[in-house]
Length: 178
Image (cartoon, rainbow, N blue to C red; front, side, top):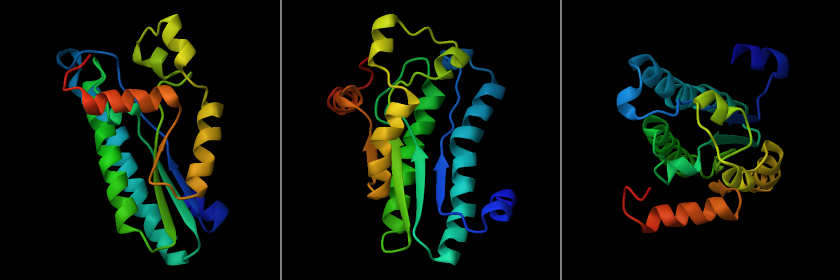
């Protein structure tokens, strides 16, 4: 926070884009991994919102907070139990912030991409099959879809038809559907 204020004086945009999780069944996760997932995906995001949103309110200029969730915030992802739970938190928390900051200078949006062609699956130890890779988006494609929604202050931004379809399926079918 201090470094951002030192460099920019006033911060107008906060994008919380972090997430991590090994691709493992819950019982196989170490306590260290569980703590790391919760610390990064929930605690860091919450703390950054709290710190930067105080600053944004104080300077009073138009500002944006974007919390990056996941399709996993709507749909159960097998072998990503703690990750999926943490992204459910991001979805609900961001919806509440959007509501609480209506009428202020801060717009709050949740961006929920599906699988993206990043290093995340490799680092998680997930083997993504070729057909699934064809449905994944590049970070640039996600950003191109997200940017107009962020500028409009949309509460929820879901990237791509496949992601919207998965969320619909997740809402219609009972747990566990996978």
